[in-house]
Length: 225
Image 1 (cartoon, rainbow, N blue to C red):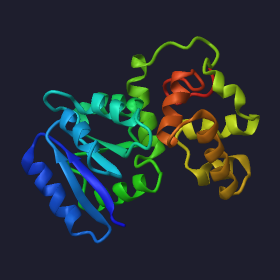
Image 2 (image 1 turned 60 degrees about the horizontal axis):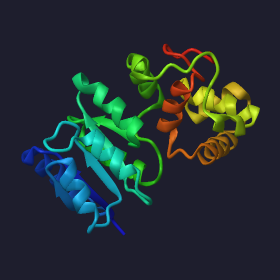
Image 3 (image 1 turned 90 degrees about the horizontal axis):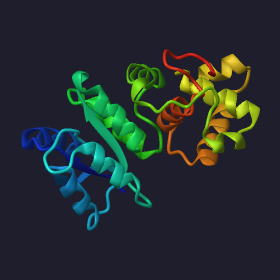
Image 4 (image 1 turned 90 degrees about the vertical axis):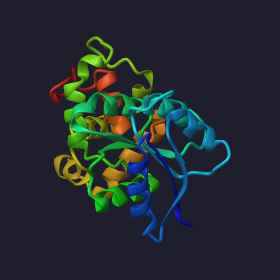
């Protein structure tokens, strides 16, 4: 079955361009379009969607709030936030709202297609290091968590899982974590999966966000506070 995509953007020409790119792919299908977040939510009530490509600045309901409402629903589609260099704060808010990643509006077609496929398969579409830089820049937006991580679910993690979570939050890939901890990459992947399950998170992006929110890492990419 093709990946069912909904395009959400108030610029008709931009949606048309994305639709043309996706229509040429045998494994993708644009099943819905919307000009704002409210229309997107309405469409989801009647149209099954796997991935939502979401703009941020739109009338009526912006992409961040729409993402928050969509991701709060059971069996929600994955959401990719569209952003530009001067709107990083919207991407940050979108990640906290539950988006599986963010990308630039002028992304090359190949990267856009790869991102959609990655998100559909359950991965995040942004490099952990890119996410870390974004969080470092906007860490003042995060609530102060004192000197100890406050998220009680972190107590469910084993010592090794906390080590892995810390390295994920610092921007390391599975391969880099494996080398750092002298583990196989498959073992690291298993640890990451258990972390996601125990903490009720969707992907690595949300691991990074939670690590900053709880104070497990501090702005600037530092270790435990």
